[in-house]
Amino acid sequence: MTNAIDSMPVTVDLSGKTCLVTGAAGGIGSAVSAAFLKAGANVLATDLHSSQQMQNLVELSGGQLQFFEHDLCKDADLESCIERAGYEGANVLFNNAGIFDMAPLLESTLEQYDRIFALNVRAMFRLMQGMAGHLVASGISGSIINLSSGAGRHGHALTSHYCASKAAVISYTQSAALAFAKNDIKVNAIAPGEIDTPMWQLVERLFSKYENQAIGEKRRLVSETVPMGRMGVPADIAGVAVFLASDLSRYVTGQTINVDGGDVLS
Image 1 (cartoon, helix red, strand yellow):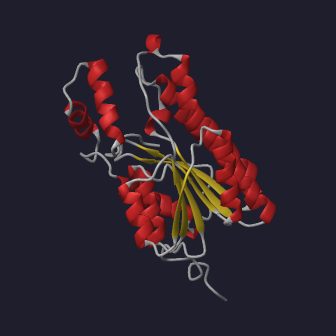
Image 2 (image 1 turned 90 degrees about the vertical axis):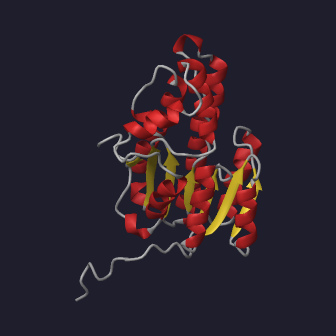
C-alpha cells in the first residue's frame, strides 16, 4: 500500500498549467510571470502597456509567454481578456492589476474612489468570476490568486479608498473559495507588506506631500518597523504565488497569506 506521503509532490512543477497574470508589466507582475515560467508554466501576461522587463521575458520564453495589452477598466478589454484565458485553457489566475492613491479622508474624492475601485475591485471580481466560469464549464481544477495588501487588514487615515478596496479583495476571496470548493478550484489571496517596486516612487511622493517628509524618509522608517528589518522584494511575492498555483497547496483555499516580514501576525 502506497504511503500518502510518498504520493505527495516534493518539487514545485507548474508544467501543464497555463497562468494568466494581470498587471504583468509591473514589479510584482513581472517577477511572478518569470517565476511561473521557471516552474514550467505557460503564461498569458497582460497590462496597459508592456515594459522592457516584460519584453525581455517574452523574447527569452521561446513562445512560453504571450503578452497582450488590455485596459481592464474598459469592459470590452476586460471581457476580451477573460475570453482569451478561456480559449487558451488558463487554469491559474494571478489577479494582480491594481492602482494606489491617497489623500486625507476629508479630501478624498468620489473620482478617486471610482478609479481605485474600478480596477482593484470591479475588474478583480470579474476576472475571478470569468476564470472560475471557464473552469467550472470545462470541469477542470484550478487556482485563483488575488492580490490584496496589508492595507486591506486595517484602515489608514490617508489611504481610506485603497484600504477599503484591498479589504474587499479579501472578502471576495473568501466568498469565492466557498463557492467553488466543490469544483476543486482554490481561491486564495496574498497580502504584501511594503514591497520595493517602482510603485513605491509614487507612494513616497504622496507620503512626502501629506506627511511633510523628505523623499527616502518613508522608505527608511518602513524598513525599520518591519520585524525582519527590510522591505520586501517582488521575488518574495513570486515564491508564494508559485506555491499557491501548484499542487503543493492543493488543500489551501479561502486564505489570505501575509507576505510582509512579520508586520501582521495571524
